[in-house]
Image 1 (tube, each protein chain N blue to C red):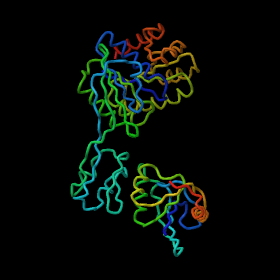
Image 2 (spheres, chains in turn brown, blue):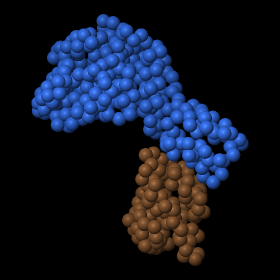
Image 3 (cartoon, rainbow over the protein chains, first blue to last red):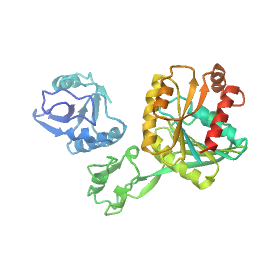
Image 4 (cartoon, rainbow over the protein chains, first blue to last red):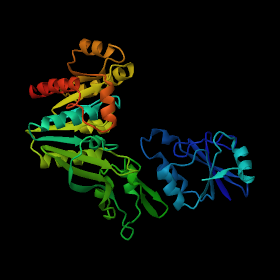
Length: 112
Length: 282
């Protein structure tokens, strides 16, 4: 299974960024072999409008099953994410990715 | 002649002045009142005219024709607003981000993004004796006020003579909706209240109208509350104070029940006369 985390840093030791559209990185963990990939999303800071849809488009190039984030995507991004068939879990803002993963595994994150 | 009643701060009395002034002027001559605060128009609370016409207003957004699309992705890179996204084999339009610039549509090599009309709000016209009242209201959930404001102004230009008074009840603030409202008016009246908050936002509004190179004057509403810093500022900046409407409990009471003031509160009436004189001298 591939789980995407909106992240403040570019590795598995980072904290979850509460934002979707303007998170600087997305860390994607493959739970089968513990490998990970990183989407660099720092350019989202320069977007005046529509950072959410743009981030969703980047995410669409990876086949993720789950997205773990903080506040949850805004309306425009949510419409796009719906089409990707990703299960979104929120409430992990500022958690370490590891803690967020544990919270997800113990069903204590809220489904968006 | 187009007169905008604007302000920096919200709740200073734009609608109070607009409706009373327009109604008063219409007792003598044909007058147009336009509520351009399309996000929450409220002049209609005070002007109870007879509904004349209703128009559904639309703005243009692209519509994706899947059959002809070659999925080149040019539309995505041509959009400055991230309103067009490519998700795998699908082009998705986010209408709330679209600024109707036509770039994606015009530059599409397979003509797969025709522009279609998307309803954004309603324009209504009312008639009350010699007063023509036009109100536009955005649909719930619509984020962009500018296209509706622009279309409403166009409607007014096409349907009413410019040699009569046209009073624009403007949105508050200094952002795009206000710029759109003010950009082709002949004169701006900035309504403020004599408080630190009123002064702070008045300064922003003055900066805006100066940038737009508009002739303007200030109206002090609820004169008597707060301090005299607004007057000091206007004197220092050589800004004319066109009228001062006194603070009054009677005004608040009548306003709360949706009534016009100038025919019931003598000190309010006096200031409307002062304003009339000012406007006729422009």
